[in-house]
Image 1 (cartoon, rainbow, N blue to C red):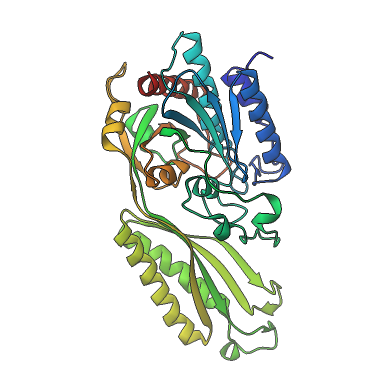
Image 2 (image 1 turned 90 degrees about the vertical axis):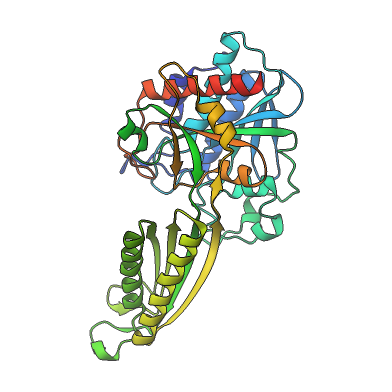
Length: 395
């Protein structure tokens, strides 16, 4: 089997998990589309003669054993958010395989092993904890903590995968992740490629608003104990406080009980995604929104419980490594820019593995949406940038 080039690989992935209605992708972990993608990756690795390793939770690494010593790892993830875009994750995996091809075509022989990774459940779209695969691989999250996580249908994480001790990343000396940019910084700069300087701290918080179910027609407005009102005010407060502070706050998921058109709800559960420029700003934003929600709950005679489900602190990538990756390219240095999106790279960096990120320009600036995109010329520029980076780091 001859390994496919970038455009053929991208074309092969395009229909997997794609909705005919919206054009978006549904590639949730341990579902058929994601398993098809994993099988595809295994086939591409085998076609290149790469040595495959996996762990008990489904993370994969395909090794090019061209050298010895601490390996240089690249790659990303293959899962998506609900109704997501094509590029978030898979672009990094496809580009990594294509970068290995480019190095081989140019006769580059690394002195260190080069690996291509696929981490599971990066988005947290099924089991609620973002970067779950890389957290387990680094030991940042234990199997005991992860095994009881449940998806919206009540399926536990331990029902779809096995548990085990981390070890897949033993021998990894450095990690480089290529990713489509989730924003417009590179568009505004007129640059196709960028390098990450940091990841903003971010967290997911579950807000549970309790009330009393009642008839929508016969219950007077002044007699209602309606948690939807408390939630609505909280969503507006989060928007206002984030705007005032120049931060990010989003309520993007809501569950209502009993969820009937003609019933006052008994409960509303909503998840706040908050991202800020510093750990202190994140704590202050969440505290302010929670306080205002509690004050409104008291006026509405509803109840409120706030539970942090996952919180990731600020990640500052190795500045010297970023400079080394970004400097001295044809056309000038690549820009070094921050991101407010979470990535597996942030988890590996926090675990003490020297880490860098490359971004490929996204002309719409839109992500986690079917409108997410990148041009083929920019994608190929990303492949070349990653190959050049791996050559610098592995030779």
